[in-house]
Image 1 (tube, rainbow, N blue to C red):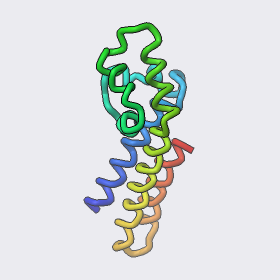
Image 2 (cartoon, rainbow, N blue to C red; image 1 turned 60 degrees about the vertical axis):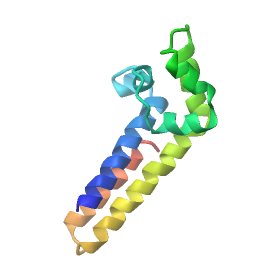
Image 3 (cartoon, one colour; image 1 turned 90 degrees about the vertical axis):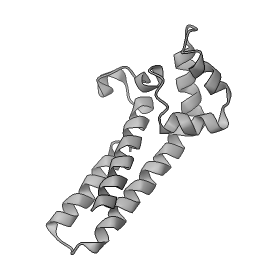
Length: 124
């Protein structure tokens, strides 16, 4: 059960990271890109940094130029960072479901599997 919780938790966090780039401020309840604006290097940002070295310069400048945060968000979206993060969230979700296979089939196991499914539905 520990591994299930760990993998579901990691998947949940990566999904949350993705939503920061794919949802509006109204949907999020906070400004889109707010994690990046705070300097938090989330999964989509880390994946984007692998392909777009200039993103590092923008982040290190602490978005001091007008429009630099929006530019950074666009780089993350267009570099494949969000897609690679989706793949990671799916991988961790799949592992969480695999971790449940040691449990007998029951309504409890089904509920745990549905939590994993619900988490991924947030980014569909």
